[in-house]
Every structure is written in C-alpha cells, then in structure tokens.
Length: 284
Image (cartoon, rainbow, N blue to C red; front, side):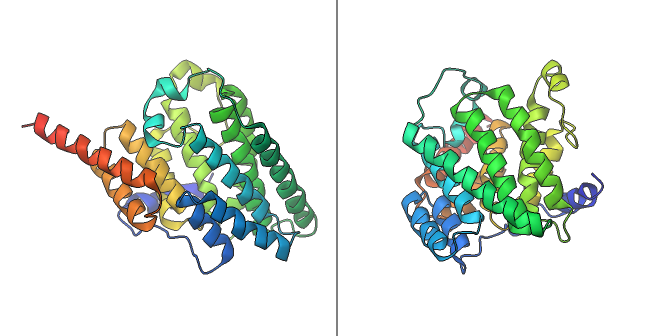
C-alpha cells in the first residue's frame, strides 16, 4: 500500500512523540476513557444515553459491543498482558465458557452497528464513522473468535474482512489512523508465526514483519483518535514478549497515570519494575 510507506517512515522517526490522548470533551471519547479505566458499566451508561439521543448512529452500538467483549476477557482472565507473553496460553485450544447472555448481546450489537453503518454508506460511501464502525465490528468479531472461541485459523479468515474496511479507511484524506491498529497487529502476529504457517496465512498488504508491525502500532499510539491507548497496551505486550523492559515500563507509566482506575496498568507496572531490578542484578 503506497500510502503506508511514508507514514511508517514518519512513525519510525517519531517514536518518542507524545502519545495520542482520547478526547473526553465528547461522549464517545468519555465512553472509551471509561473502557480504558475498566469501568464497563460507566461506558455502557454513556453509550446508552447516546443511543437514546440518536438511535441511528452506528458507533455507539459498536463501542457497546467492545465493552461487553473486554468485560468478558476480564472475567475469563485473558485481559492481562502476561497472558500474551506466553505462546502456550495464546494458542491453548482448550474451550472457554463464554457467558451466553453476553455473547448474544455482543453479536446483537455488532449486527445493529453494521446495519446502521451500511445504511449511511448507501448514501455516503466515504462516511468516516460508518467505515470505522464496520472496521471495529469486524475486528471485534475476529478477536472474539480467536481469544474466546479459540478459532485461530477461523479468525484469520475474519481478519481479511477487517482489512477490507481498513483499506477504505486509510484511503480517506486524511486517513483514519485508528485503522492502522488492525494492520499493525496482524503484521506482528503473522511475523511471529513459524515459516510454514506463515505460508498458509496470506493477506494483502501483510508481509509478516514484526518490525513493521511495531512501527505501525506506534503510529496509532501517536495519532489514533480512539485506539491510541489500545495501541500502547499492545506495544507493551510486544515489548514484554521481546524482553524490552525499559520500553514496556515507559508505556505502562503513561497508561497508569492516564487511567489510574485501571488496576491492570498498576499491577503490570509493578511487575515490570521488579523484572528490571532482577535483570539489572543479574547483569552485575
């Protein structure tokens, strides 16, 4: 993708730039901030009010689905950075037990979000919020399949759908930088696969470069409207996997300061600090 190269070069030159902060002057930004603080009930309250105010807008339905998804990850003890450091945990095929009520509501909300987004796109093909909603919905369904239903290769099939919407988001002027989250994540995941598996998992615009994936996630962390903090969380997990503890510590320090009500950030920050102390002691 031609537009990607200059943006990645820019990201590589600006890795120390200030991270993007969610704009909490508007209700949707407030809902995302509640999600990052693990206040799922608070996020639902804001989004329910938005839906009552304008039931035809698609984004609130998608973000409500995200709130259910992350709450379910939290309940199943998947929403921990340590989980993503361990390949055995990530590829564990033992079935989890999703909450059936949550699952039903999750997919109902995705359907509602998609229906409203497609209605907008029928008359406005480049509607930014509608395209972003479809990208979000496809990404959430992909992650649900991979992390909760444990359908690894099935999730790669769904990821192709996500990338179709991402390409439309990034073709806008200016691009919707949050769309790069899916590209960066997939780039890193595919790059982490053994060669023989990578050969079977082929996607347009994905080369399987972990370095490129990291650069792309940095771009979202610095310029994303809603996904900036999520990109920093994913980068923290990557840096922990790769034993880049200093970079992980820096990101967690910012996240813990920005979202003090999220116990995960403080717990992980303490854990990284302890690991750094051990590493320094061992190197003496």
